[in-house]
Image 1 (spheres, rainbow, N blue to C red):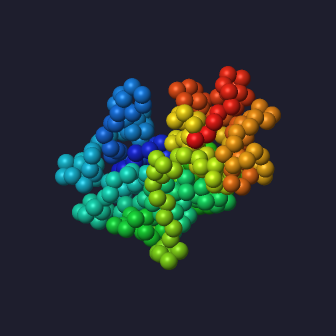
Image 2: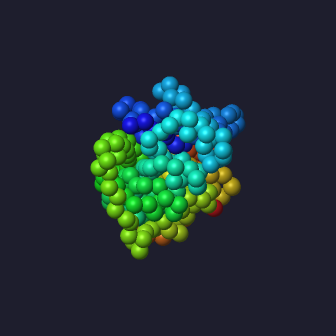
Image 3: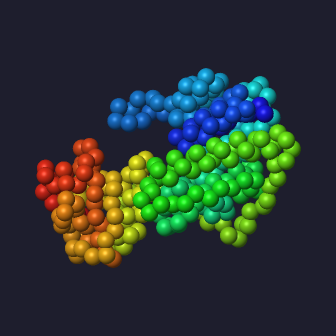
Length: 302
């Protein structure tokens, strides 16, 4: 089946690579324009754009996929079906109804509709999540679902490890969905809107680890925001101690107090203690906690 692909993120790039290795290799990939990122503020392409170039697929980059010039590029590619994955732009009419558009979403819909389904599943302590392929509609991830696959969340999964497995599952499901669509056998089932939960975008303030919260909750937040966003503890001097790996303990120092034990930093919380195993000092690089302790005094929290 001749296809076009709309995506942006690393997750979308991984799904694109699987689709490109199938009989449904996209004739066109659409992504947002390059953005300035990093300390040097150099313009960098979205991961899906870099993957398209690497794969030798025609690429269109647009601020708004609905603008006439971009719609014309899609029409010129003459796709029989379109796939959307972690794209980040609202698709409106007339593009929305121009052909069948399949959306790859990393959750078990209707749970965790929205922008941050992987992060929210980890934060909530879910033991299982998954991937769905649904038909794109005007609502927020509310379209009917064609295929789904469950993916367990391991106790030590962070965003990076879980997203990698979900992207692999999503790529396989998308290829299967196009196989069925081409054969005229793809069917859809409506979602139960009453059971929907929403995965709101992770706001900057959520990155802060608050010792007034339970340690288990903070450990899940660290996992959910690693390695792409990052969680931190606010220091008394106004700096931030990045937390790259942490586990929850049943007991430790008093709330807001910091102690050292067995090569790790212990932060007392409202319930239990957070054991910091890998950290990033202000202006420094990530390092194991024991290396941090060899070169720094115990930090004081704000």
